[in-house]
Length: 188
Image (cartoon, rainbow, N blue to C red; front, side, top):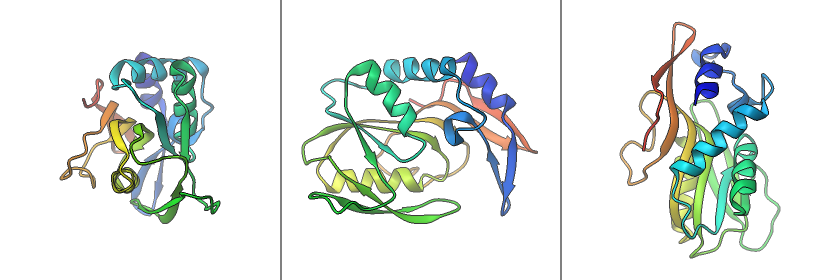
């Protein structure tokens, strides 16, 4: 995980309404995402998660798409993308996403009751998006095989007091305008 670690240490920080936000290729698409970094992350995800009998990878748009696509290509497991707009398709399920800086609706398609799913995302920060996704999948009677966010930002989040166990590849904090590695092995 040398590339991921170094890329986080080198990432720029911006402030938005008092929230220190790191700008990273995995979470923002800028600076550009180098294939070596994506490959390193993909290999580590495949090693860390439970893929036994997984039917689908489920990921929120937009920044989970590239990670989930890379894992899909490595495992031949299809990807269901949770979109930020409704297509009105049969079986579409709506969920409310609340993060530290926004609130919106998201829509799940192509996940059925009984599907065994791996949920992947780029960053776990406030936990609002992940909590909404996991709650919706549970209500849909999908079986959550495993959950992973590549990067976890230190601090309390909306998953702390739940039954959901989210694995991460690396845990960071932002202190005085710089990323600090809290746990380079992540959770789980």
